Amino acid sequence: MRTKEIIRNPNFAFLTFFLFLFFYYLLIFDASLYYHHHQPIFLFDKTYLKEFLLYPGGPVELITQFFLQFFYFNLLGAFFISAFSLSIFIIIYKFIKKIGDFKYSLILSFLPVSLLLIIQNHYNSPLMLTVKYLFAFIFFLVYVKIPERYKVFFIPLSCLIYYILGGWIYLFYIVICTLQELLFSKDRGKYIYAVLNVVVYFIYTYIAARYLFMIALKEAYLYIAPYRFYSWPFNFNLNLYSYLFFLSFPVLQIALFVCLKYIKVKVKKQNKLLVRFHHISAQSIFIILAAALILIFSFDRQEKKTIQIDYLAEQGRWDELLNISRGIEEYNVLVNFNVNRALYHTGQLLDNLFDYPQMKGADGLFLENIPRDAATATSDLYFDLGHIKEALVMAYEGQTKFEYNPKMLKRIVVTNIINEKYGVAKKFLDLLNKSIMHRKWVKHYRTYLSDKSLIESDSLIQLKRKFTPKSDFFIAISGNSDTDLIELLKENENNKMAFEYLMAYYLLEYRLEDLLEHLDKFKKLGYRKYPRHIEEALLLIRFIYPSKNVAIDYSINQQTIEQFERFNSFLSSFENKVKAREALKKGFYNTYWYYVLYVKPNRTELE
Image 1 (cartoon, rainbow, N blue to C red):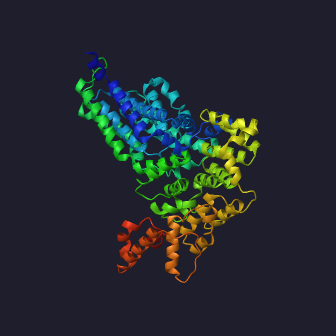
Image 2: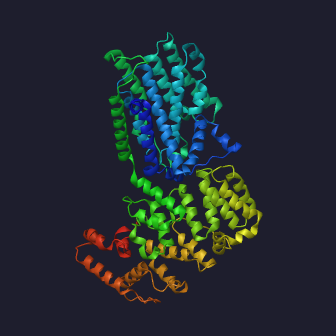
């Protein structure tokens, strides 16, 4: 009997819904990947806190940042995002139960939440949207419960609500409060309160834009998220589901009013049984099934893999990265970039470079023509190459777009320690120390500043100091990345990564003459044979320039020669190379010859 009473209680449905969401975000969505993608930080620092208090909507964004830092732990991230969704669900349910005991109150309450699940099921969606809507519903619940005699004071105080929520969400709050007055309020002054809500909305937002904050009038009315979310890599924009969610609760209010007024839904007293057992259990099952279908069909698995690849690159888990990259169906230049890094770190760059389609050519190595927002990724590459000063420059540039990015703050600390700029490193360590999530990391590197001898035992710092250029040189403009690599090799001819990236660059740019100039370095660097793609390039040179005498240190593998003969034989059996493309792709897609013939971007007629 006790079990029956528990299941009959709506709280059982809420608990079931929460557990379902929690395990979904924990096991499938992976909240820690959301953290990696957004790189949030919360600093107990006056300057940092003040920045969020200088515009409407900032206070909730500050609260969101506090919670978001804990998404570093997948368990906590899954808990918080599930709790936020559940809270909105419960508030909507309480509102529905207040105006009438509808037979399917749980399902009706779930309808707006279902749209929210779609919105937040994408890694580029700002968590602050969910938190802002939650606060809007909390303020609305307070508004519904406040006695009539206090509304004349409460409504003018909504300027504080506007400051907390920001323009777009404040508009949502005003709309649902106005509809509450017009449709469900029995107070004599409901029309006055409805008009007053609308009036304060226009007045407060106008005053905020003109006299209180440094924001445009459009921002005052419609601001929803910081501008950084609208550019790469988030590319967030309000879509159809965002607008539907915005409209869903007001539409639900109108629908409930119509049901009460015209369909004559029977309203039970609150001290009677709310709904029968089978209604609660049936609704709970329906909600879980509906939520499961919504999450499954709205979840972008390719988006997850793309972010997961970037996460694994940061962790240096290169073999796992390459395994996941094989499941990527659509080309992505950032995936291409990280796959190339992984190929080098696993010793496969010049043997298996074309296993992944190099659709962007050299851009897949250096992100040369990608927007400046890719500075953080570029900093990673330069750090790998030992070009520490440029890694630092890119870290600073990344900070201009994503302020307080903890990954780049750490890069600034480490690169300055490598460069023996300990004073600068200390300033950024002091800043990071104001984040509870990074104090352990700060403590480790602070010991280096107090005892410089400890640095000698840090193999990473010692390795980077060894490869760091001792003299300055101008960084090449887009399209001439080989000059940077050549300069790095001049500084240290044993910089194997710089050499392999130089060879990969020449392959991708089809600069075979330049490749030949550096052919002798394979033996100097201890290679026992030419990598596969170098052999393929040498056979291509022989084929195009049969009279050219190319001095080589190693003989070309017979298997590579036979494969080249099969390639040419296959190609000649077709009338033209266009018709041969699909047939050649099956057996030769990962060869340099196929890349030159069909994949290389900006291929010239001469080529």
